[in-house]
Image (cartoon, rainbow, N blue to C red; front, side):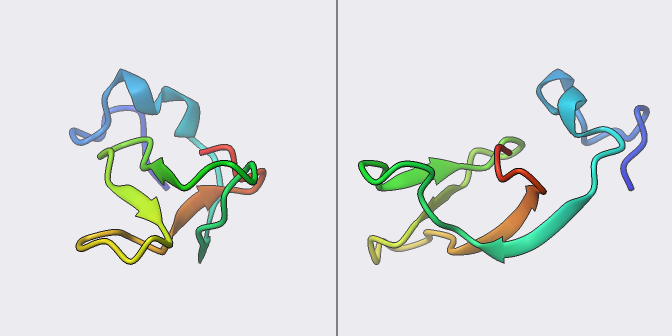
Length: 65
């Protein structure tokens, strides 16, 4: 689990402190969404077949982050 003083965390990650993450395949939150971005590093998640896209990642239980 990440701690508040971990060097790689910045203010945009405050909502992830103490949160349990699960690994799962990316799925759009809304039918019109074709991609999303990591809340920490801004990597792209999609199923468009683009070079470098991610399809699996860590997210909060509610899938919001």
